[in-house]
Image 1 (cartoon, rainbow, N blue to C red):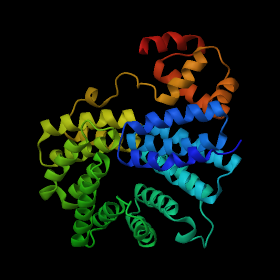
Image 2 (image 1 turned 135 degrees about the horizontal axis):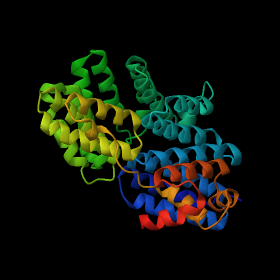
Image 3 (image 1 turned 90 degrees about the horizontal axis):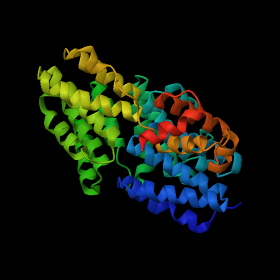
Length: 366
């Protein structure tokens, strides 16, 4: 089974659609995966899974992003794809794991796929930027803003001049500087520059992220308008994780200013979105802020069950049809372990305990 050259040429437009936060990205990726499975194109499917990981991450569907990323990393190890394929897949997978709060998993992913020493920008290119950006995010999540700042500045210095694509390293660096209490003027300048670049690009995810970061860098006195614009820009977009972050940060700012009623409303919305994304650290932050507003316990405790992700629904439907785990794995070109993981989540979310109950539960979902 060999990669289809036409299929490979399809990937660059998909990347543009993903970065533009277009709904069409997942539509075309789903079609591409179906075609790759029908044609038996293992390498084509693996490339689709790699970009699906990024698309799901941008959408905030972290469970799907992680599963697609795991399958993509395992696939490139089993079927080939070279060092470039490994570092790209690892970067996007680790970024999703960090957002979900699986820092140990992200550490293992990056260690497993680290490029050999001496492979510089001419050999790896922007693929290594993706890898280093994930490393910077992991260090920041571990409470090491200085280490994170060093990594993101090195990545920007080595790779950013080679591409006009990069949005995000400036506001990441600005946030680290703000946390360290260092170079406040430079931090503001970097955050402002990213907002300007994001406005030119026009994608709501990029602009919302940059505005949120500028709000954090400017602080409680001057950052409110930037955070409010971030919430407005992201409202109605597919970028629900970024929207959740903006809601929580604005709610936290208003809580500190003693505007508790509006803060509670924003924090409840942010908490609901964070939970639907599977963003455990963000959900924990929202819960803590809600409690600080004096919200009652029932406003914080989770109610109801999550909807199934797209991948979970596909596995559940095949399981409900009577297929075995091995048959499902062969049909979807994934591992049996992946099928078992999805089924376990389906049982939890649907409140069922056996395959025989899946069909009825799925029918209720519609």
